Image 1 (tube, helix red, strand yellow):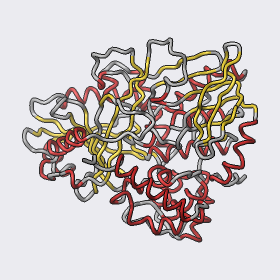
Image 2 (image 1 turned 90 degrees about the vertical axis):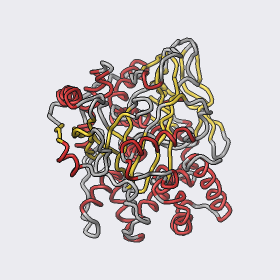
Image 3 (image 1 turned 90 degrees about the horizontal axis):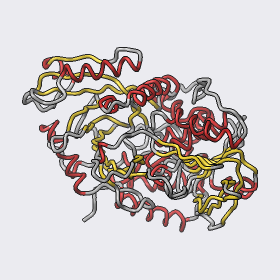
Image 4 (image 1 turned 120 degrees about the horizontal axis):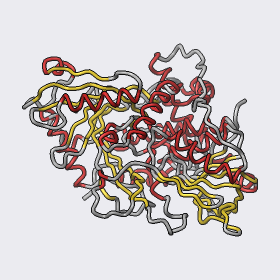
Length: 528
């Protein structure tokens, strides 16, 4: 059954009716955690609605390190259950969503006298592999490593260990999970900010929201509310708990692949503070990240990289790939995300020493999820639903059902096998509609990216785009992957998308100005 178009016109018409319904569950927060909760509730037949204050994946879930991994560092911290759950969920995602979640080879180079050496790191990976249920690493001596990884710093180099994790487009992962939820009867709306929770006789029974597009306010009723708002989790909950969210910023540089071509993800310890840093291929470019700092700026504005973080990441490039001579002028774009880390308030603890365990805070009628990992979003969703089950009156069991329905992709003779796999992974059950649109738009790529023009058109038509940055920074990643935020492509984007979005000329021109100002402020190098 085809769903109605999911766009701003539908949203305007549907919002009053959706607000008037009686819901089993309202999910607050449109990142990967909220999307996962909606997906698991919808598959069980719950009447469920997700509300996002800005845009789907606007926060951390579009600005992560893009990795789907078990987290080797958690083993060293003794968090074996977290690692075990993560590697198992990684395998599920690789099997269920190829083309969206793909294997990525990692290399750790070993240097004389530098921790961790080959034996220690091999022992760590042996535990990692045991948790995953398969051997997944191999040591390469120096001569072999040079073929695998040309350009590495040679001084003191002994060899390297190769292992495998996975990589994704985090914003597209959110959209795919939301698509699965909507296909099973869930609803999702962006641009709706929760003003306050409604309480009656000491129990949460709904919430007040404000529509960012019209300014209207609505009262919604629900048997349970699940908050999955990431770094914003403290805003609506009671203030009695000593556990709080500690917002930590992780920033990244994106380089053109030709400036630092890598076939693997390189993991190494930064010389300045011995923190793990990665350089890895993503979407035809090269990512350098990440930092780990307390984030003191307002959470209501897009996080941005600082000049100090740029210097830190450039120093990492110089340390590991000295011959490449990477400079600030090579940077294509940047992004910074805020990790919602649960803390007990110990101010002396370094950001990187905080544990990455999640927490659930429960009050009658409301469950708040704090912390967590992208990789384990399904398990987190189940835990939240189990906590909500008492309020909704429906039991929750985990029968291991797939998060993503198998996609029976139609024949696509005009596309390469890699393109077919990519489109199926990113669009799932919406793929037939996208392919029908391709008959009108064609199958050309945007600039030198893997993104097709039809994906841009499909997003404008059917992926609830409210603003231009939704289209260029999250539905597609053109604002990151094309120079100057894809400014040179804006005339063609306008010709294709303005009719689909229903914007008049004045609206389009204002959206362009706002988008380019945002890009320069938060997705480029820091402005003097």
